Each structure stands twice: as structure tokens, then as C-alpha cells.
Length: 204
Image 1 (cartoon, helix red, strand yellow):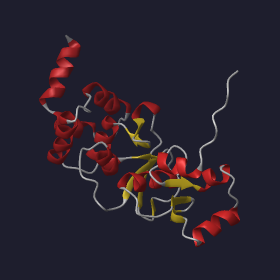
Image 2 (spheres, rainbow, N blue to C red):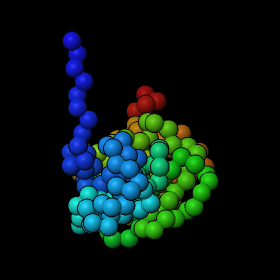
Image 3 (tube, helix red, strand yellow):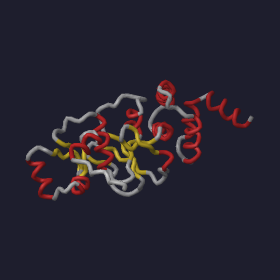
Image 4 (cartoon, rainbow, N blue to C red):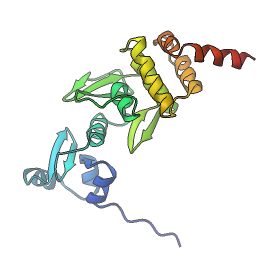
């Protein structure tokens, strides 16, 4: 007879999620609105964003801040752009606003501490989960960064991706083709000769 696993406790859930939980998750664990408010007043929960809390203290690692920003932006939201590049170890984390992409064109473009990017083209193959945080793939991250970086800076990200063995030219080519109107030419220019060799190899 198959037995069901017990639901996680608040502590277990917080450990899985870098110390952060959502209001919806607290309610699923049996908290009511009054209980949540009481815990906030007692300093056992710390409000990070609307509907997102740190458990016990607000001295979070950067991964906790990233996940909190993603959770605050709702279903389908993923870490992206410069923040995704940092999660993939392609650049430093920095201390500015956290980049999050949501699959929509509606709503505010910024929340407190979050830079919201809106996209109607965010297919499943361009998103993944890394260290428990929903994030754009390396290939999609490079295309997103091409919107804001010069070719030389983009080349440095590509070099880091190659160094960390996360660079995939086939995936990058697919992302460029799946996103017409984006700066695919910039990405191709940053890759340079490697891209040309790949196209010749494919033709051969």
C-alpha cells in the first residue's frame, strides 16, 4: 500500500527555498491572516515583497533575494537578464534591482527592488530551474543581455559560459531563431567564428 509523504513544516519549506515563503504557502500550512500578521509583528516573519516573507530573519543570501523577487512576480515568473547571468556564474551578483521576466505585457514595469521585464514569448525550453530558482536558460539569458550590452561585454559572458561548460551553441542558435526581431545579429557577432564554423558543419 502506497503511503503519502507528510507535508513539509514551515522550517523545512524555508530551508528548501533559501529562507523565503509566500503567503499562499503559509495558508496551505494552516496559517490564517491573523496568524501571519501576528508572526510579522513578533518578528518571526519579515515582509520582503507583497505576499513574500523571510522566515526568522531578513539576512538572506543572494539566492534568497532572487527567489523572493521571482515569487513576488507571480506564476510563470523567472529570474532573467543580469540577475540570471549572475545565477549562472557568468558575472557578479551586484546590489541593484533584481531582473525578473514575466510572461505578459500587462502590469507595472517595476516593483520595489525588482526590474520587471515582460515577454509574450517565453517558451518552456527557454526556462529552467537552478538551485531551486526558476531562471532563463543560459542561451536565453545571453539573448536578453544582448539587448543591453555591447558586443565586447557580451563576449565576456560567452567566455564565462564556455569556461563553466554551460555554453551551448545549438541552444543559442535555437533561441535566436525562435525570437525574431531580437538582437540575434549582436549575439552572432559576439560568438564570431565559432558560429560560422557551426553553420558550415551543419550544412556539411
